[in-house]
Image (cartoon, one colour):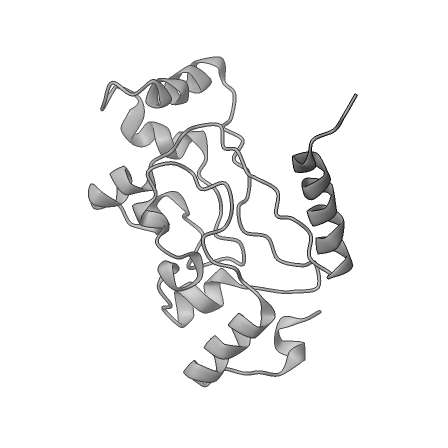
Length: 165
């Protein structure tokens, strides 16, 4: 059986990326085809669903109870919205997959950035509020150089020990 060049190129790209120190970013699938755009256009702030963004290290992913505050009865005719109520009826949580991940040796605090420094969510997460479906990959490539550029621009510390543990 002959393999097509497409398979060869995919394998070569994967291993080529590994040789260069880059792993392909996995595609993330969420339990609900959530539209950030519908929610932000309704006037909801990111912190309504990501409730610990200004106070904790991790911004948090919304619990089913958060969704049910507005969606215990139908707001639209969306089958995605119905999935929320069905999960609540079954007593099953919505299991969201984190989109943004940092290396284990990096300490990032949403409290310090979003809360104390009042940096807008869009600075680090891009135009997430305009997304009509969950993005499969981060909208912003958060690399160390990118962080350092932001720290230099804002006069924040560039000391390695401040972010690396």
